[in-house]
Length: 184
Image 1 (tube, rainbow, N blue to C red):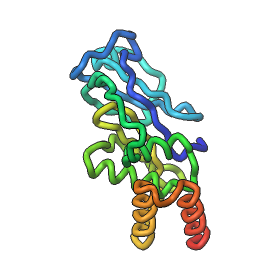
Image 2: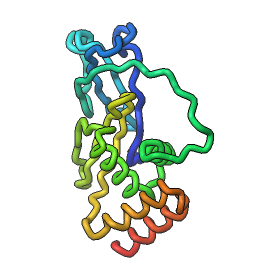
Image 3: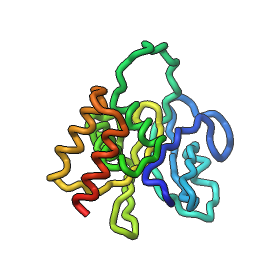
Image 4: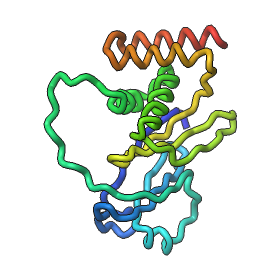
């Protein structure tokens, strides 16, 4: 799989019985590794228990379904927050931004916005971490790049620069690639 991270949104109906998930009801969520990406399943616990599967989940967790809140109209020039920046970077799928993506995910986990649901070690020793957004249920599969402590300060500065708007994604990606070349 070429993606180092990706995102899958929570479903609003049971993947198995196709009945709506009810607000504040229990839900079983699972990711299936298809070889080309991840397929997400959100199911009633009863449906998950009785349905036979010929595959093992890449990751599975129990949660509570929260119905989407009605969107409040945002100000047109609102500053980008860490969650929005993470979503943007995950959508871009730029390997040069792997350190920034990982630090943003850890920041959001420590802020209790994301919760780590699973971690799987790959054959090359790196770890894929499965995070879920507590509020809207989106799932992020993010590669842990194995950042060293001496590189952490630089990546944190890049994150601050992106959030404050003092640097562009291109400038930070160039810095990240240069740092990777210097440590290789």
